[in-house]
Length: 171
Image 1 (spheres, rainbow, N blue to C red):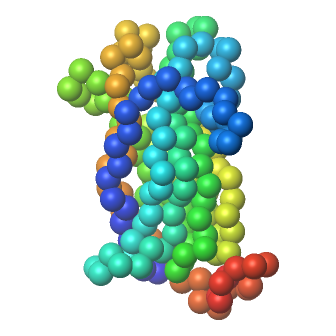
Image 2 (cartoon, rainbow, N blue to C red):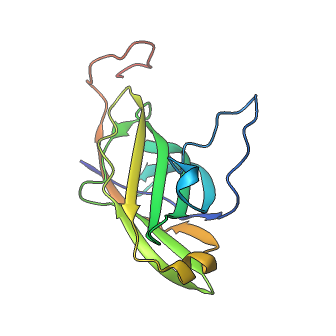
Image 3 (cartoon, helix red, strand yellow):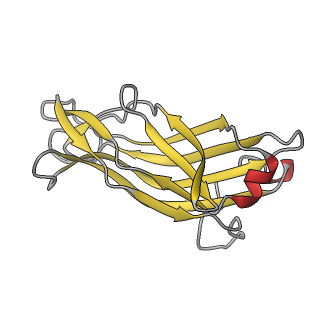
């Protein structure tokens, strides 16, 4: 096992992007008709081996994040992303979850943890998450950004992993 960590990320919440021929549709929220939603996107989140932080062990790509006020005034956070197992290692959030801080009005309004599933060597797999938050309807209106603080992780090497079709050596 190798110790890793991510870098903090920040994304502003805005309108769900419109459908466009050259780009895939937004994956979250799952059903925009359920209620008003805000959307953010983070291009990547990689976990780098300590202490050098030069080699990415594994990561998450194209994190799409939404918060949505549903008809019963419950506020849900949804995430869609791709697990990148084509790096030096593999890992999961079982012991070290990702933390999503919903921020607005110069404070953290709610925090959601995601114990993401295993990111497997030689795989590029879609991942999704949905969780009911503690936000009130009034706090939903104040929410302006999503912050992912730096988080620790542990990774195992992909060296010796069975080959994956089209993958690099040791994948």
